[in-house]
Image 1 (cartoon, one colour):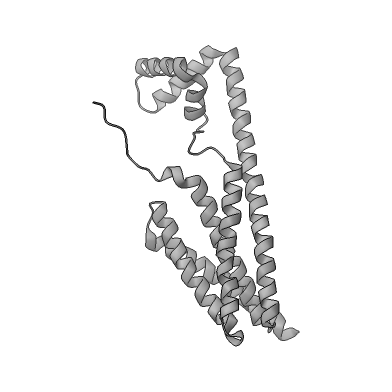
Image 2 (spheres, helix red, strand yellow):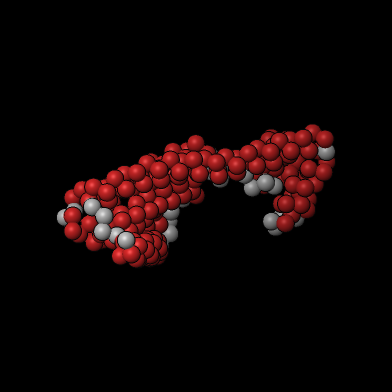
Length: 231
């Protein structure tokens, strides 16, 4: 009885994980920085809350649109490459066979074996073999614009809600301090979870996200204090 291949890898998570982590990080950092900057300028609690909510809506839409356009461009490029490969397989099959043979030879197979493998794979699925081994496009790495767009928008919103909720719960005179602490703790945890999900170092991932989040919040707070004092 043949056993099933049940080995699990992290690479199948790359598409949605990248968009989700980017969205959540951007949501927390952007809105927390915005709230801290506005709070540092001396604005009222209502103004701070309104700014946070407006930033959340604008940021979510921006993330969704930007991610969709970016990933769709990649998808269009992949589709064009595949279409060109189909035409070449029809017009010059011998050259395409030689191209695939050279690829496998470069990976360590002797020429005769590489030639046999190329022939067999092209008999079974020529475009699949060339798409995967020549173009480097697979089901795992292929662009999925709608999935990336939705993941970015949702994750940005969820991340942004944390500093917004902090504004609602924190004492009006301590909004900046509470928002900063909450955002940094959340970023540290999120960075660790993202690294864990991707199979990377949890501590390194957490510290990396924490560092850049702290830098963004500190810079925005400085700008808010500067212009608030001038006003």
